[in-house]
Amino acid sequence: CKVIVEIGVNRNGERSMTHAYLKNKSDDCIYVGIDVEDKILLNNDEKRIHTIKTNSFNQAQIREFLTQLGIEKIDILAIDGWHSVNAVINDWLYSDMLSENGIVVFHDTNYHPGPAVFLPAINPDFFRVEYYFQNQADYGMGVAYKIK
Image (cartoon, rainbow, N blue to C red; front, side, top):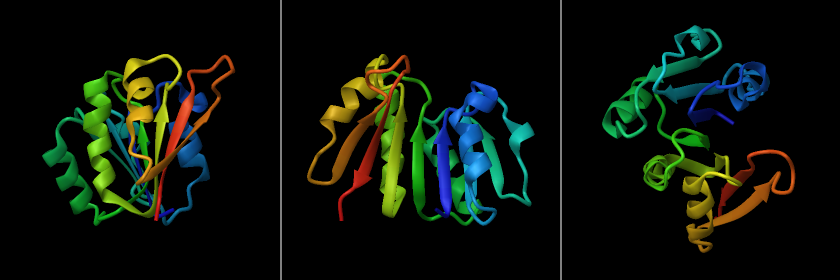
């Protein structure tokens, strides 16, 4: 994995997916967190950890930020921002930057309308969707795997 882009950053401290990404990524992997709240405390140039305080709907600003970091392709796109259908559709638009083996991880697939409605609508000709943590006391997760 060379690039992780996460929309919705570090809401649960050490229990967050952000923590898991940062703890397990290699030092040469770039992490970019996008959030409406300031997450600058996570930034670490040496470990290639960057955040941007903005709404994920600001596509031009975010894409310019990624370009400035030298990012052309994303290996893991994590969608855990606002959970409306429109927000999830907007965040999915970043999937046009997925690498050949890129994946999109959706959080909160069990209870929130955006991911719950969107995942079943993904075209199976282009992505294989798998669900995780469906029957547990968890908000659920879905992963869309690019079909080659």
